[in-house]
Image 1 (cartoon, one colour):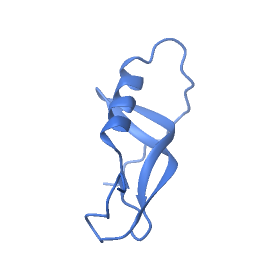
Image 2: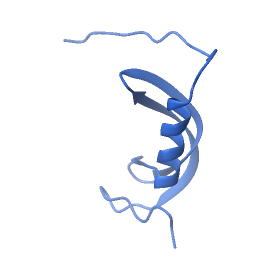
Image 3: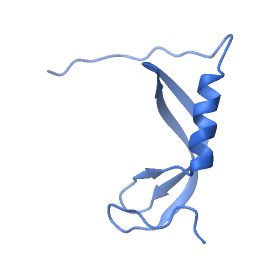
Image 4: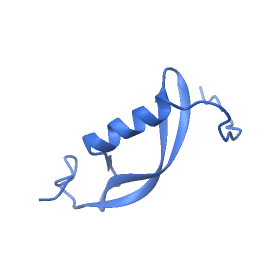
Length: 78
């Protein structure tokens, strides 16, 4: 059994890759690295298993102490 099935948007095959994910939690932006992610080979849509989604939320909610930070430019287009 494939853990992700086929893409619900285009029907493409989904392949697992380690990705960098932008994750928002309580109004704060976090960047999670090396996240096992299902990625559609045709359209690029991303999918997470329930186990990985829970691990991402737990990692961010438990994040304490000194975290690596990077400056992120904010640009208004409108």
